[in-house]
Image (cartoon, rainbow over all chains, first blue to last red):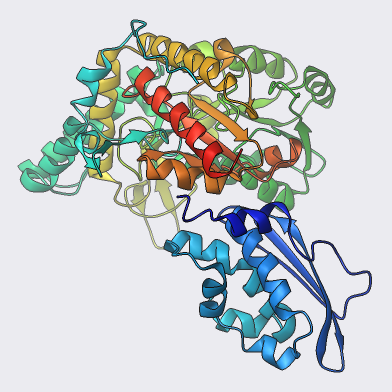
Length: 129
Length: 417
């Protein structure tokens, strides 16, 4: 369990990076996990095809919050085209812990919201996240 | 931290009861199962499992129609269960005991059959902020269909129904009150008898969700004096897929059927049908026969213990749990003191999200529920996303509480608190 709730995961949970909202975002999307009620909203500012600013808000467990916090760090300054290519494996690797199926859903909520935002909802639903 | 071991006598012989439940004999990594999620579904004793098995192995046949021996036996056992439930809830007649799939199905039956016939535009429907979604959504749908207005009884900080709201809605002379007997989150035991009497004076029909009451304390529908009471089998040692709606006979008789089909008819012609008598008018289609039989045996098990004794055991155990939990730093319990508290205890621990906490407890083979418990309005009321809920039953003892509390300290360590 100590291995699961590693120092950096708790750090992202307690001191999330890029937490907040963007006043007039170019892209914004929010979703929740109906199972547990966790909610995440991601706002993006896009300039010249790059992620100029990113903020997230909402609430959830340590895994979902740490995961989305790390994800926002990862995409800052990146081309939107590259953001579209991020896979669930990328996110799970970022977390660096082995998750049970139920907890995988927690870990991937942030990515689901991000992809829904950059692709549009229908595309993200096809992703089967 | 000090470890207190359970030494106080219990109203029930918990060790003997545990021996009746096969699932509790299993271990995982040398740790016994500490099952604290009976509020979601209870475990099943051998007698219930065997009775259902026996039906399928030795007298499986459809009920109510066959003239051969197996069918007669199946019918007899299924109908015996109805009578057992009737006695268990002290209904005046077995005709008032309708088998349904669960509480959700029972409440929807009331909403669709009684509701659409009796609720009109501008009528008022009242429910409380502590209801399970199954006692909220059917009334919202009914309001949408009929144009009726929804009013609410809110919950106080201590987890009781707000008396000023009760007085306010009584003045509106509502058509219907939907209220839970025991909150599945806060554990609050509501004064059903008093509420039924007060709302009847206002001409209100009173619907009681007894899902969290019937497994844990005596339920006497005549004493309560409500109009409809819904219970579910799987939370009271029985199988999933069988529940009961009790209704006042005169109301049930006047109500149109909910589902049409086989078994609920007296005679069918191409252009019209005469319906069967109670309770069959509301039991279209082949019922959950093994489930009904299993529920009857579950009722036997509980009746042998005595529901007063079950309540006394849980009052003591919840009292002990509330006491021990209050010692854990940064832990907040929701709901009233043990005297008014049913078997469910909800809490939050510091900034540990309930999902993380439940995950950590699972490592100790402790099963608790984490989430909104199908009571999102209540979560909004307390401005929390979720709680962790430990819910107790007849096979739980003080040792389970001790194991839980030790694991909560362990969770504090893991979260560097």
